[in-house]
Amino acid sequence: MLKLHGFCVSNYYNMAKLVLLEKRVPFEEVEAVPDGSPAFLARSPRGKVPFLETDEGFLNETGAILEYLEQLYPEPALLPAEPFARARVRALMKAIELYVELSARLGYPEAFFGTPVAPPLRERCRDELLAGVDALARHAAFAPFVAGERFTLADVYFLYSFDLAKGVARALFDEDLSARLPGARALLQRLGENPNVQRIAADREAAMAAYLARKRAGR
Image 1 (tube, rainbow, N blue to C red):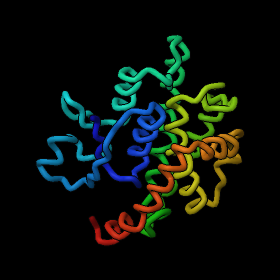
Image 2 (image 1 turned 180 degrees about the vertical axis):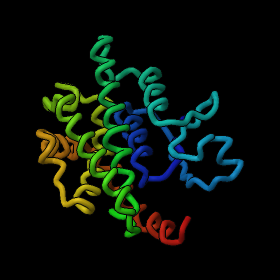
Image 3 (image 1 turned 60 degrees about the vertical axis):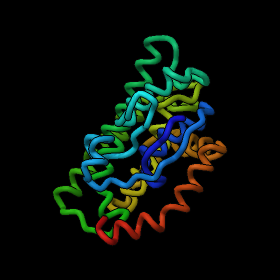
Image 4 (image 1 turned 135 degrees about the vertical axis):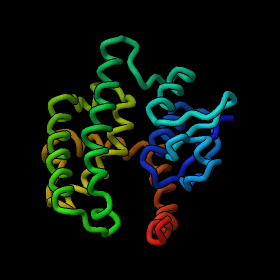
């Protein structure tokens, strides 16, 4: 049986978890908090979560994990079969990761943990995040899903990246990212009605107190 290592507050962990649930793949969750130990680094070379334990070894990096699951369990398909459409979904996934999620991450310390971000870094966060959201507005369809009529891996990335980015923009810049991205509110509401998404949200909420306690303790 596949084993998903990580913890329920991690947005990338939840991306992999949602794909496993959507594809109805039996799997075991194994709580793993990065600690920099040799044992951890042997399973995840950069010391991050999630990583997936398979009969053949460990897989790390969320994008690689999702591609592996898509190839191993092709139904329900979360990537289009047609090459151009498939490549377009991959481009949207990469745009969300690089230009929205990673840009917003610069502001996480202040937005979510109360640790002030230096003004130059705050300005960089704002400029890169707004540019990323504006680019996504030009690139995505939201008709009704990110890439068009079907739920794809681009929606998985969007679901677990955009809400966090919204929180950063609201806390640091008093900006409403949804106003810059027509269709975002309706899509988040639609995705929020998915039972698997609701299950993951409940698991995340249940794990949040322990996670915040670890962060306050500097672990």
